[in-house]
Amino acid sequence: MDDDIQHRLDTIAPLIVDGSPHAVALGFRIDRLTPGKAAMSAPYSEALIGDPETGTLHGGVITALLDHVCGMAAFGGLGARDTPATLDLRIDYMRPAKPGQDIHAEAECLKSHGLVAFVRATAHDGDIADPVAIAQAAFMITRASKAAQERAMKAMRGEHPL
Image (cartoon, rainbow, N blue to C red):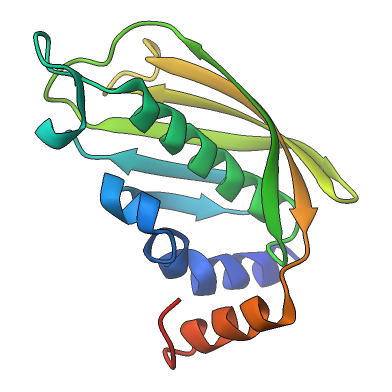
């Protein structure tokens, strides 16, 4: 069963970032995607600085990265068939990110059942033992419209951009 899920994850992985203009604009990269676990990163960019005096990345970049990586972990944890929507996302910011450093995020689906998944994640700038932020989230499966499903299938076959 995990092999089937991993195959679906491997097939859809290129579309997870490329299919999201927001993720593309922020430069997100998928570092790892397995059933129930995900890792992503966001490169440091001067265009995304929140505090020009310190050069610290804007907290919204970290929020978006944590939401995205949690959603990926939930997707795999729920069988990698249907799109999960964020029901709840709590983020505790521990400290500012270090200027000039990429942000890395790792998430794990702690439990999934039915249509709901519960996920925990950490964002750091090089040392996971010294996190920038931690997150806890809940996701729920949503059913895509038939047209959206067809677009996704065509995109996976390379026939149509999302």
